[in-house]
Image 1: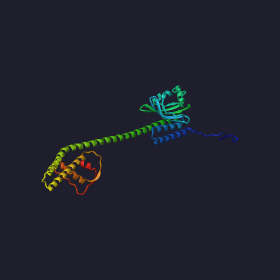
Image 2: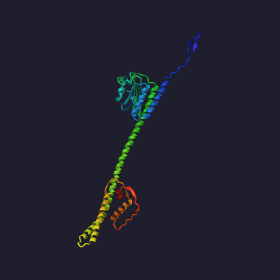
Image 3: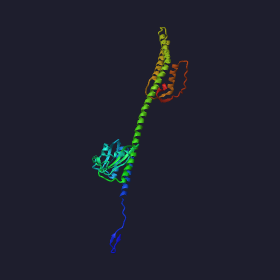
Image 4: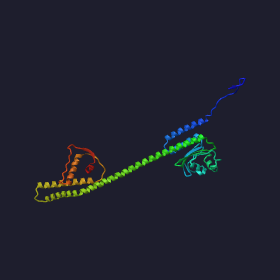
Length: 338
């Protein structure tokens, strides 16, 4: 302080610092941190864009903010953040009904209007803007391959001067929102594609399995056809044995011993014929797998007997099967036809 000769204070020297700008910067940095948290924890692109609009509107003190997709001159808004007592917007709007600044947006230029009443781009559309509680505007275009596809908008119900740091903040949020929403949409598309591919693979696998089953059955029937000649000849031999034994049984002077022998021959031959028929039917039929525990060695012996019947006495079939049972869980029919 400075005093006069009588000791009275005349003035005081000091330094004052305006911290308003510093405080605004801190608020905007905190808002960007919150935005990053939202992007990390939110999955739906529409929720991301709405959260970005809310953060912008609250940070700069706007009356409304939102993210809308643009097709030609039509703006489509799914969700719009608005201050209390301001009705939110949703639906489709013709941007030219709000002014000619759509041309600036299509060129990739930011639109900042401080007063719609005086700006030449909006003087003729003031009524339409006031109907949605907007007099001052900030619009950030979002471009893809040189084409306007969306915008992040900010509106105030009164005329106001948009500060450079506010515009820079909106620009930063718009860019981050564009990247986040594109990433989420890409992730969702990839997830949908993966699900679709899984369904296609399952369908193709089913078709392949059906084709393999059909081919296997066709091969079985072809094998049956190839065996038919030999089986018919062998079956005819079995019938010959039965017929001959039957004719011999008709003799009136036949002894009891011979009669018993012929009857046994007929019975054994009929059993062989039934066994051969059953094995051929098992070979030809199509059925689901029915595994059970069986002695594989015994099954091989039975198969060898059938093959011996089919091939006749000119071909010798020799199998080496241990006496110890070989228990295995397998479908008997599939083993027989393998």
